[in-house]
Image (cartoon, rainbow, N blue to C red; front, side, top):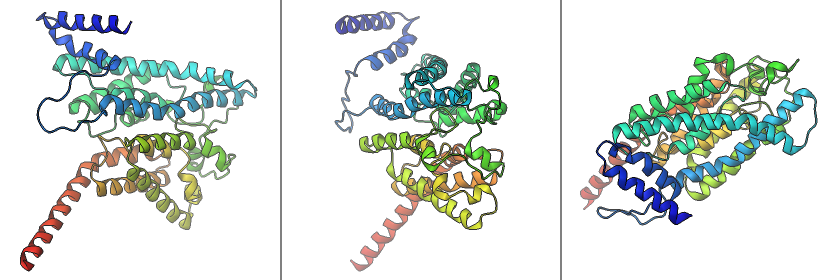
Length: 386
């Protein structure tokens, strides 16, 4: 079967290359080829490193790291739904209910996003990159479960065209595409992205629903939280599909750090910045968000998920070692600042990461120039003492 498929793909490639009218579609079939098989070409000239890691393996690693949060999100979607109904069903029934709601969102995300990516690849005559393997999964995972599918499609189209292809495609974008999609959906369709009823499936048909998120309740200056710290840590609370569980995010963080795909410096920097800012506000204690314990700020909302999977995006994050620390700390600081001072959007982490995406190149610029100045001074001192 493998040899037959290999032979068939090679035959299609030869047919396309031999036709002037169809030659432009070669990148599309190459995308299927590299997705199904390991690339069979190697670098022939120039400086290079022999390594098994390529873009496809990196993206697959991130997808694997996302799986625990995705599976838990599917279960939690069913759990929150049946909890509102007051029904007790099996774990399998709970999971399948969530799977039935979330899988169509993933399918729409990949269908729309990959169609646009293939279209741009054919138009520009370049290869299709594997970057959307991650973005296509992240976008629905950060959405409310009841958002209409057409809104998911429009948000995906906006993110791929404006936040990615407009800058030249994978590796050239300055903003995280998944966060851009969520930001677009939030500002374009606010009633479907906030409020009490958007976080639970079929909320419109459930009477007396109590699906408000913890941060939403705190933003309304209601400090009476019915959930324990364990509920918040495990993630059995209302929220975006896969952002509620800090435990699942930590499993993903371990995979990314162990494989060297994610930066532990950015993750730790975010925790330090968020904890410090939350502690300062705890000392002031003016409203419910300020009095909310600083350590709980780190395990509610999308903080952990955003820190692990979005702040560490190797394209839109800082690249220098010192820059990663600065970038991470500022993400944590701005996340808590936005939560406290912006009641209209108490989540905070999305806007904080997008803001620092914009400033990441500037951070790296000044870090590099600071190192150059330090080395010049060191050289001049050594020459003077020489």
